[in-house]
Length: 135
Image (cartoon, rainbow, N blue to C red; front, side):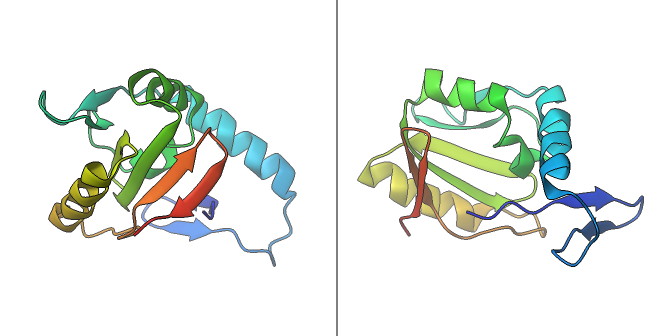
């Protein structure tokens, strides 16, 4: 999984590149501080489903996946062996790892109408460390 750093320039965003004269360790630390200042709540999409997303849509949803608060909520509500998808900048999907949820996330990705696409893939994270594309 790649982490991209962006600066908000008002009407546009600019991605940092390795050619930029910037200390990336400081950039990463500051970015994580900013993400961790934001609050968000992980909620179930439906009472009958164990698929979770953010209560409110935000252009920062894809970044909030990295926040310590969301990580803690994922551990509490889903566990350590999870599936996740980031179909667009405004949405994340998280579910317990199993075949049914994998297929459900694939379907939900296709239903995401946000034009700011991030990925059509479903990923697995096990024990908070390993990320692998499952489909």
